[in-house]
Image 1: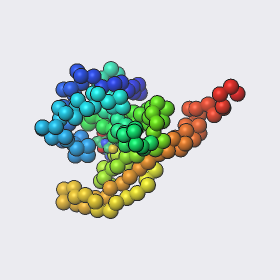
Image 2: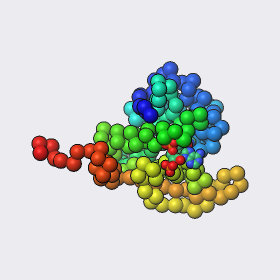
Image 3: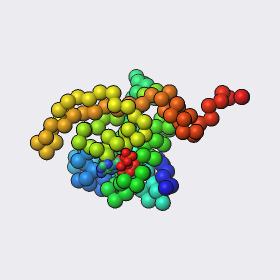
Image 4: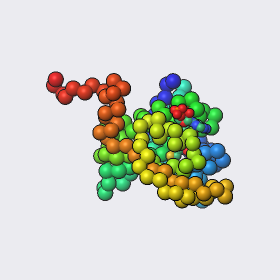
Length: 177
Ligand SMILES: CC(C)(COP(=O)(O)OP(=O)(O)OC[C@H]1O[C@@H](n2cnc3c(N)ncnc32)[C@H](O)[C@@H]1OP(=O)(O)O)[C@@H](O)C(=O)NCCC(=O)NCCS
């Protein structure tokens, strides 16, 4: 499937507002809230590291690397795929693309994602793209009255490079060889 990432534009506002309010997405992704949605969209549109996921010319999701480059070589990954387009491999492809973008185009050396243990899709997605479970904070959150863990995943630039070499997607030779 053709999955591409592009910069967020001002005319994506309505699409983002719909995603912010979608009950299936906000269960996992959170909603900035009625008074903060506009500010959050303005932050996203200004960012060089937030992208719309497109397939077949349609906007189907959002993927981002959230970072504070002044102080850190670590950055947080975030991704959502709208409910009608989930389970088609789009999240896997988009997250892999943004990981490669972050390691190739920014100072990030480590990327991480935090997921609640009841979010099966996100747990599987993280493992699928090669993130490793680094830490688990037990019973850190209440969800529908049930205690759930916070699970932290990460990947280093070298780990991603090794797995791409194994997949045959990178040429391992040094420049000039
Ligand atoms: C998590 C999310 C981005 C996955 O997107 P997607 O396009 O459906 O992902 P893919 O189709 O590439 O599937 C990735 C893996 O998740 C699994 N998966 C996807 N949806 C699932 C579901 N509802 N239940 C169980 N597993 C699911 C797939 O089977 C696949 O696992 P596998 O490779 O082991 O078979 C999407 O469910 C979503 O937007 N969720 C809400 C926001 C969110 O939780 N974001 C993550 C926070 S970091």
